[in-house]
Image (tube, rainbow, N blue to C red):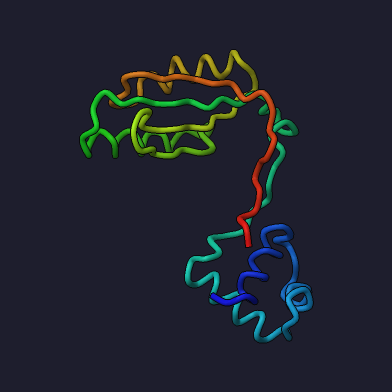
Length: 150
């Protein structure tokens, strides 16, 4: 990966709907080499896909919680079962396994506190291997969905 590839990635992270012609002009290449480089970045997995970034408030998901999960058991089968179950919950928009305690961090969106409470009681609390859930409510987004540094 060279400086031109990095520049292409920086531009696409901010404006993913550019045509190849527009992207080529922005990074100082002709269309053909730009298209070749773009396809290679997609093929090698550097670019994993394209998507729209949707405002959660605009679709009625105004409540967010960060949930720290401590596992009772940490054997492979329990962890894989927990991770598979978390991956099936649409309200979990991000899940990360951590070193140390807690074991996982989940970012969850719901319509409101009551919806979150129901999700925690009926879905999260019964996930395999959980010892403890500790929730922190998001007050304000200071930095959200920032592109990776170039």
